[in-house]
Length: 161
Image (cartoon, rainbow, N blue to C red):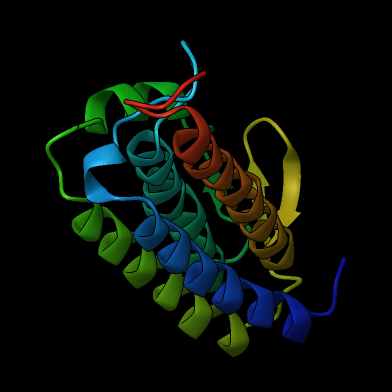
């Protein structure tokens, strides 16, 4: 695992990078998909918010508050279907993601990163593991959003394929 200080810095930076990437795509293109079956920027941002709000932050809060709490498996696909709202403003989604990330960044330095939780499918995991996983998850979907923006610039409406 990376050093906690490096992970905290990268969690902060990745949130800033996400905010910049969201702003780089015109608002009218937020629902544009690069290909059938691929997510738009808005869908990706919804997914990132869902992960922070319903998975990463609650797990960290549970591990900070209790010794070895049970951590249930979360049906991300069902949450995506239930929370998906193409009319929800990107700025609202981004602000909600950033608020959850700030809460994580406030919580993590106050606790041992070795504090465990018992994940229903993975077994024992730690606060540090969750923090590092959240970072990787953000990077993965940030690159997905970059792809959407680049494809939109090259092939979006009114552009030759």
